[in-house]
Amino acid sequence: MAEPEAEKPKLDLSHNKANVMLRKAAEGKYGIAGVCVYNLEGILATVRAATAKRSPAMLLLFPWAQTYSGALLAQAAAAAARAAPVPITLHLDHAQSPAAVHAAADTACYDSIMLDMSHYDKAENLARTAELVRYCHARGIACEAEPGRIMGGEDGVADTVDLEAVMTSAAEARRFVDTGIDWLAPAFGNVHGSYGRRGIRLEYERLRAVREAVGGEVRLVLHGTDGFDGGIYRECVEAGITKVNINGVLNRRYLEVQREGGLGVSETMERGTRVMQEAIEECMDMLGSTGKA
Image (cartoon, rainbow, N blue to C red; front, side, top):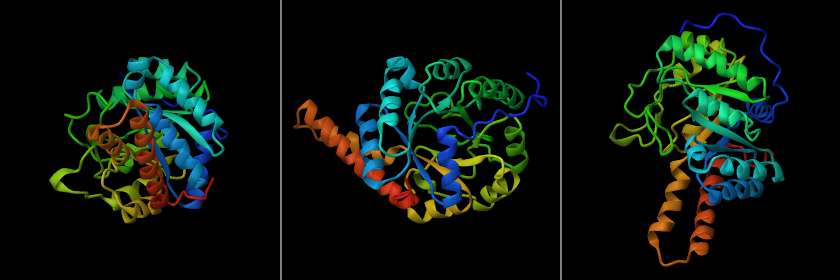
């Protein structure tokens, strides 16, 4: 596939709920938690945390949810988001095939979708991304993409764990912004999953260079936050990040409750929901979104 040529003017998605939330976050200098959820407990924990903290939030599903439940988890998450007393949206993270993007976009559940074509070569990645942006925008859905490639893998994300990390340059960011995306997830030393012995080594200068190049046109989002503390979050937000994906910090606590045993099914679900809510609330405090809804 050839690289995309200039297309029609970008559709106006300024009133898209997720875009509105990220615009306010950029203006207010705080981050919004994109909470990776796998079940009803995660959905409830996010809504309850956002309500308790008066914070905006995003529910994130992986394409795994589509293969596991069809549209059922998405429908439940969308209903919970729409009924919440604070702004909450639903996002599909790491959609790694056009079929997954089309299926999600056609449910009318999602406010935003990440178009992850990073396993294709560069030219095909850009061309497919541009094509899928048009498909999603026509349905009022905001789009995210990942220039470069973030190393590592997460539960629910396929095919990228063994691919080599590629840092995002300002020039690469520009090529992706030209596809029409709304949000950009730069690779600047962040890692999906555990950072392991190497530890957290983020290239903030690279992130700031990306912001200088394209930050006036798209919102910047952060993947790979396992082990981050308030200081790291603040520095990322100061450098332009508005959406921050969180996963392990809450889902590990849920798994710990399950491993403890000794409880009935309903008690396990209720306690799991409580411990995830606590973890999400802690992240909202660190991201500065508490009280911003």
